[in-house]
Amino acid sequence: MRLNKFLSFCGIASRRKAEKLILSGKVSVNGQVIRDLSYKINPEKDKVYINGKLIIPPPKVYYLFYKPKGVLTSLYDPHHKETLRPFLEKLPFKVFPVGRLDKYSEGLILLTNDGELANLLLHPRYEVKRVYRVWVAPKIEEEKIKTLFKSGIIIENKLIKPLNFNFLKKDKDKWIYEITVKEGVKREVRRIIDYLGGKVHRLIRIKFGPLSLVNLKPGEIRPLSKKEYKELLLFVSQLKNSKILDNTSSAELT
Image (cartoon, rainbow, N blue to C red; front, side):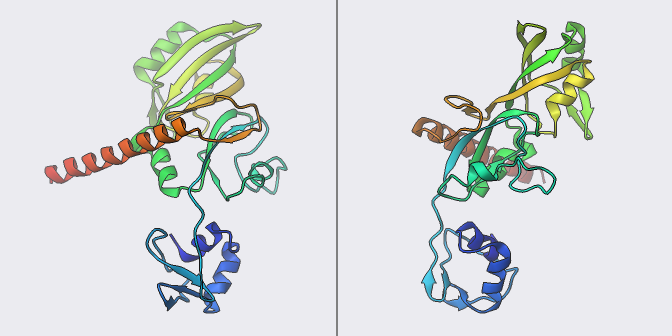
């Protein structure tokens, strides 16, 4: 992690102000004054000081957030007033969203300050499952769904095949489906429905990896329960192990 990013992460200053602190010679790492803005540290091993005072990083935290419809998954946007900022300002620690939902979608977003965990969950190689509940009209023809499972579609140069595409029930003039995908492509579910000739009227993400949208209303945030926390760490540990196995297999082939 870059030194200025670490200082910002700890709530000391913005990245720009952190750069000024570094250039002024007020920041040291393991007893050595650092003026190099590109300098990187290991937050778990290196000791960072400002004017001789040890900087202690905040604990890693994990929250579930029900993003309401109409809110951008961004901390700032000059063209839109509705962003995540007013929701996140209520929390005791600085966090960021793991992944995105478009403005008109709603549902589950994981909030954390754990960068390594976020990178693992979002990396395309791990194909972390996302489950969505979608209100569609008109009804999707069964033959089109079968063709989708057989051939898939190309989105952003990727072959996309949903893992599940289940009809749940009819709600007045809308048909509700539950769709599971793993690619994490931008607006993936909306583009699939559009390809099938339907129109999305409501879209909710109800699952992301081992996490589910439970005990939350739109706009609410809550910490992970102990059970959810353990399941998340186990899930991420399994992702790490699969990475090690992949690297071992690749080495054996060379």
